[in-house]
Image (cartoon, rainbow, N blue to C red; front, side, top):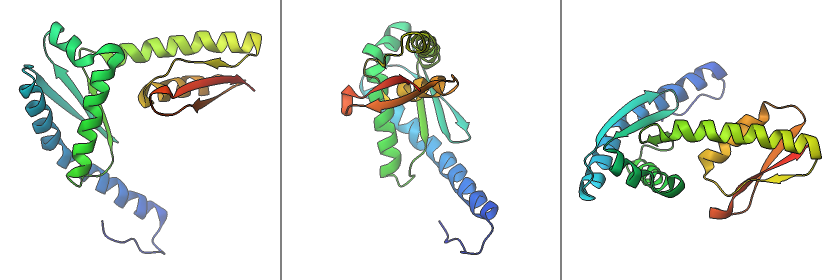
Length: 175
């Protein structure tokens, strides 16, 4: 990335960063498609990879049979999370840097987000009523983000992530 001039207006600097991100996202599409098709092919999974370019990254739908879709999702989305992580690591190894990558199978991520938002609403009511902190079960970074965002829309509550690694979870407190 070209160096920015110290006196350059912030909008110019932000514009260059946005342009750089968009170029990296565009460059990532064939890398992601090749990686996913190769890895899943080696696993014997027939899949069609649909990639949508978004403002901050890529959304990849892995279209396959219901049975193979369940295999790709894994228990509580663990296999899908692992494949997503590996995809990010490949992009970093290719020098394409950090960006948001979302892998989905059969709308699993959308359904899971809806469930997490509903859980967050129910937990919010409990915490506001009884004042006791609530500890969610451990979840992935993406799922924790959904809970934090849902809770940020509710007055009188705050959230924190606690724990390390696979034990990391969201705690909800009344303000």
